Image 1 (cartoon, rainbow, N blue to C red):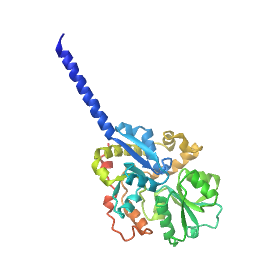
Image 2 (tube, rainbow, N blue to C red):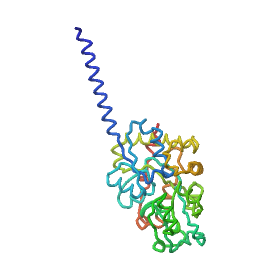
Image 3 (cartoon, rainbow, N blue to C red):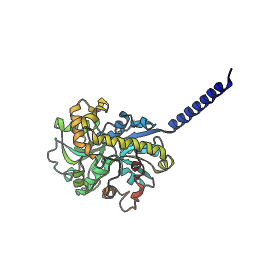
Image 4 (cartoon, rainbow, N blue to C red):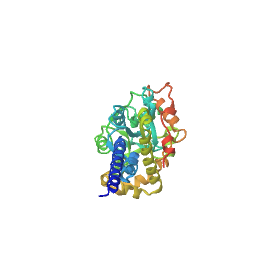
Length: 336
């Protein structure tokens, strides 16, 4: 029997086994858990869309998307080390730095909040934010970005903190029930909750921040909102994995920018439509301009966020914040 083919086959088998072990190890190292502050919300759509399009897997990533009703709770999960990243509002990166915790936006998903201050039609007397003095305002959670924005808009309208109440009511069904029961007279929420309440005539729009133009009117500038943010320390230690995530998200943003709302909706879980696919598509068509085309932080955006937080927050007001450490464009600019 010729020993050479046997030896060659053995060497080939060993090399193949080594390759498989190496691939397996790399894949295991690229398992990432990301917490989302409500992945059925339009504002956080890129995360589920990237999953649905297979872009995470194409990068060799095993991404676990976990759902949490409020962004502040998602942030706490990351700080506790339970997840590696959060799809939530960039303003948390600024707020946390004033508490000595460094996190950064590695992909900026949107350049407008996609939020609306809705008022219950039970209260026709409310015509401005100032008219909400003494009222209860719905937010996703205390310490959430909806609470940040509500507090800023109230203070800007001359109503000091303490002269209104923030009530954590989440989004979707729980938000709607709170408004129907008059537990809240107004509230900050997103699509598809907005369209559901407008369709039934139970609410009307007081402040609209679904477009860049209207956001500038309300907040004084471009307001970078939804982002993928992560602990700065984790980013520094896991740059190859972060780059793969950035590749997947930038590809997703390009998909959003080059496809219709109807095409995007087809890639989303059907229960996200909440029984109204037509309304879901219309709201997405009207609002998808809030997403960045390339994941890059919009110029002047961080300064607007700092100005908004400084307008009401004792944590931020008068503090020195190094905005350059609250985001990075390194990964999105290197994205394939």
